[in-house]
Length: 165
Image (cartoon, rainbow, N blue to C red):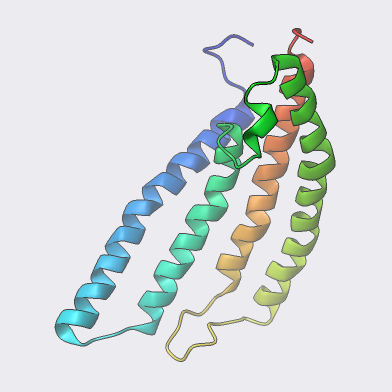
């Protein structure tokens, strides 16, 4: 694969990351609107508060796989930053296999049942006047598991594909 040619997983994760970034503007608008309504007009809407909380959660859930792809995720950098490329690959491979894949399994396994239960119960906000269809938000937990799983596999394949071992 050349530098200019991306695989499909990279392209999809890039689109998801850009969508997550664009949702930040939606979040800013929602919070701005809520503040103006509350402090200038003494009007408060529970559904609006729910909406910006949901938007914030979706931004994070969509951005996790993109952050992993960009290698900008949190790691303990005491030894890693000065390590050789080979050592970094070994650490990354170990982390992806023994932490990334089990994490994805847990999220996918529990996230699907979490989403389905919410959908079947037609779960709504616990707050009076809050948003209904809480399953939409819970779906993004499951979706995050899917995107992270494919990104973890993508990174594992890239490590093995690199001939600089």
